[in-house]
Length: 378
Image (cartoon, rainbow, N blue to C red):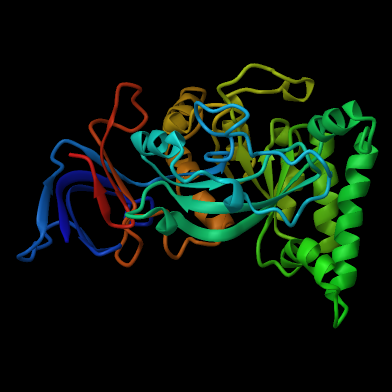
């Protein structure tokens, strides 16, 4: 049992900022938060005077453990480039839960991540939502599967075009994706499915039943529109991954209540479809009412610096409170775990980060972290 005493708490809920606060933690849960709370006997007191306390940050698009730190061929399990349609693959089966990327995440106050297959395939496989620390590696699994990864745009075209296979065009990208959903929709209506087909298409059936979202990689506005037409046809929950040109079609996203997992933003224009990359994109999405979260795409950019990417967006005009929401409350809402994570309030899981300065100050360090009530550091 812990009592964090004296910090400035950014609750990220209706309570707002609580100065000189007390947070009581019992097991994996926040028992109480507020001013003038009596600390019961037996609680270990953590002095947080002069420090900021936030919910743990959440990165909704990474390849941590799949595209490992240090290792190259040995630790590259992010893309199965032998078949463009592989919904049956599970990221969890390829993740090294001892990858150094998890420690990197903790240094930046990132307490939960979603790790997923890459974007070489039209349908790459199932993502897993993980804690970045637990007393044993089996306890790092928070939600599996958390979503189904798909991709449009340049990546599948390049990978399979180089092999002289389909898809080689955006038309084929879209056709293969639609075909997979039409097949799954047909199976959904049948009483009996052959085991092999059930194994392959069951993740798509889960998406059709809204048991998990489709996490669709798309940079360009035309590819995002293709994804939105798929949502219209099958009435699925959809989140756009990357969304470099999402601000150009923001009205269409708002109309369908589709969120964008935005980024990575601290990169060069590595591909033609990334020509609109800018930290100003976050503010443009916010002004137009599009829900979004920040992503690192680790190891493309380091997960450790997720809050820095948000800070750079604030520098370019984004409202500070919206930036905090993009690190906390928006991700959990889209992934439907807002009842447990994203804010600091009684009854929520104890994912908390203590910072030695304002979290968006570049000189600030993470000094202490709780993940599910487990205390790290200090």
